[in-house]
Length: 375
Image (cartoon, rainbow, N blue to C red; front, side, top):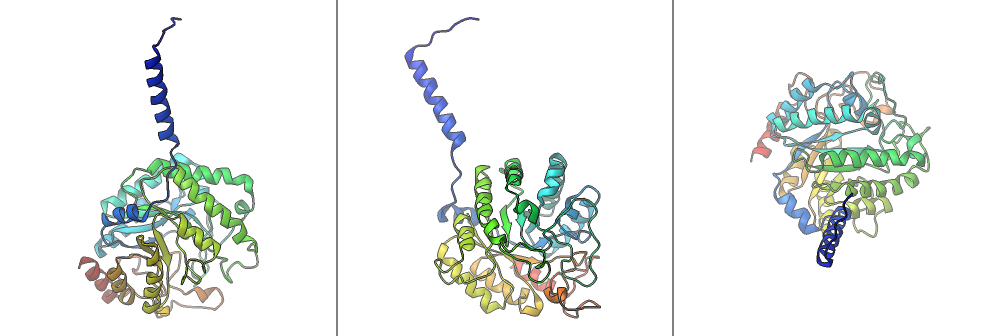
């Protein structure tokens, strides 16, 4: 072993360089300012797309599992979107599929992102979701309950994980690993950390839901934002508010304040009539950040493409309707199909745009979507 002697000047220089490198590595990713968020948004086209679930999948697990992952079908259905002029899709992941095999999961995400790019689509990726079945399981997913809206959609994390703090490290690893893997990937539009975090699932699973769910979700939602930022993504982070009184920030619920305050860009859901939709946009403009409507369009509610998209275009609000191709999710049926018996498809579809063969449910509607995006 040879010993080398350094002059004080060299020692100081090396120490400064080391300190700079450490500071760079440990630098915390801040929440985007309105200026940075609007600079990013100014580089985007008017974003219009759908919440995407391939028609052969009843839920997120079935979309991503080995036996049912269908890149050919995803390719075909992304083609339907491209033909409309859509340029983005909101896509849900699931923590259990990641946990099962991280490398395989990344491979499937890569395939999906490559197919999206082929069709000029930039996905918004969702990590967690508080809607519908609170007991997700890997393996063969159950068959759809006849004539029932989203009869097999599952939550992430499930109720057991939500109640078990020893599982939080694996959830942290899930978020950080996925974002770290794709943090500079320009095929991804952004990260939606939690879908409707305080949704109690209404009459569908209320007998087995946890009455303390919101108390459990609230701190974990905050942690999820922190985990996402810790991965230092180049893309924006968000979580959409979906119900409540938004007239003032002070009047919002705690969980809504977290969603808005921690988001780089503002996102929300609205399934109401055009005048209500516009009022929500006006209320959210006070944050002076880009606005994305990550769920809308329920025809019987008066939330339609013809009524909503012109308002969104006026304010340059990004739009993601719920439902795309009529399939195993069965979202052509309304929410009340959980409590009301349906024996045949409704005359007026609740969600969805296409039949499985790619023919539009209402051609006048798809013509309108094409036209307003093109203009």
